[in-house]
Image (tube, rainbow, N blue to C red; front, side):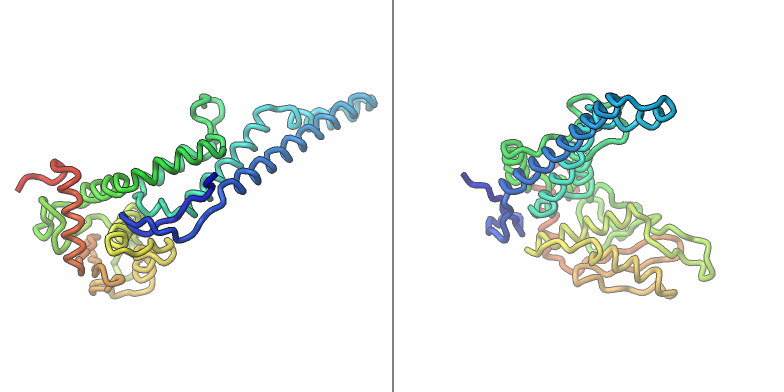
Length: 289
């Protein structure tokens, strides 16, 4: 039985960069769930023992609460879901498949595999899927087979999220430069200049950089090393922001007091490839010229 899932570093690459022992992860998950069940069973047994003493009524209040934790099916289910949620997250992070997903696709994945604080309104279908080998294989084979679609969908969403209110932007394709409105958060300060990028604009920069790195055959950088993180740090530390800043060879960035962020592309070959992917996959995504 093949129990390894490879991590991949390009839209067409099938080179196995590293492997993950899925079977071992499932065994450890099962062992953890078993230990949790044993712990709750031990508490339930302790409850029965306490009530058999019996204790004086003055101590009754103290013996009334911990048994509820021991016998609660909800609590046991919550622990199982927390373990499974962490396991799904860990496997997805290690698989490298997040590289092909934009923020929306990643958020959708997190919603499907994380526990919810509101237990009262949840249905059975909303619960975290069990971290079992057959389901893992089916899920990740589907994601891997459709990674190109995830990449293209994210690229189209990114394209549609860009502002087309300036003459430098081209409403028919990604051109030499794009301009984002309302890119910064803090306005009132001694320099009369915004001091931080808005979170949604950081996400767009991260997605833009991810697209270009994938098209360039490179791995996605950790968020702490990303273009958005680096430029966000620059904005905080430098008072003179109306200068072009080279952002890793793919873009140049320049902020303005009115809150706009200019992004100039430095790799026209990658811009052309991005436009080709959008036009080929979604002929109606780009407005007619």
